[in-house]
Length: 300
Image (cartoon, rainbow, N blue to C red; front, top):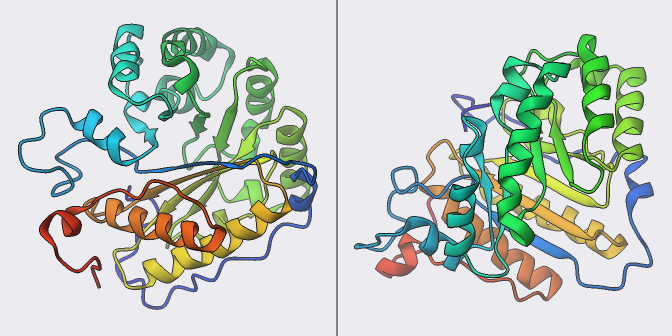
């Protein structure tokens, strides 16, 4: 993921902002079950995750799913896969594995949520339903230039989205968050329809750290800078998620990206270990290239 990439991350202020004042409203203080944690990478392609797979691996998804409990399924952004493909992915993964597919670009980037996008929504939802109970949050990522001028399109889209199908939305245009009136209206819309407001943590766009949860779920897309600060940044997220967990957060979805994707499994491993230690969890810790080769598990 190159979005928000910077040439030198040394002078970036990576401190997480305080929570939005209304984020506290979404937590369920009476929630008595263990929160669901879904942590993974953005893809399982061997070419992107060079060194992650043991030599001789023939089925990359099956191996990936033996190490992680979820995947941010970016491949679905580029075309609508047939239901038989989703069925194949379903069969290759363990019972507790979860897919988080991105809505196809025909909806977000070409039709830009206009009414004629409904045909693509229907086709996408029909086919992705083959994932059955392994279907997590479907997420919509809008183009950088999708601004509040198109707010009516967004409202129409959210209102027509099937209420029994969880949805998360990522908006990237700065005006969604720097205008208090617009952001208030946006967050109210998301809360009313139980839409999860995606948080993006990337070096070059610190403004997307709005820290505003609109449902009792997080969907965090974290982008490393291939810099030593990546580990401290993950530590900060462990602390913030721990706070939300104690307040009654029901679902934590956290996906790690890197410009050099080889590092994504290693950073995911670090993050999961820290969560396990902080919250006394027993989340599965993925093996990495360093484990397989008996090397020191650090990149910096």
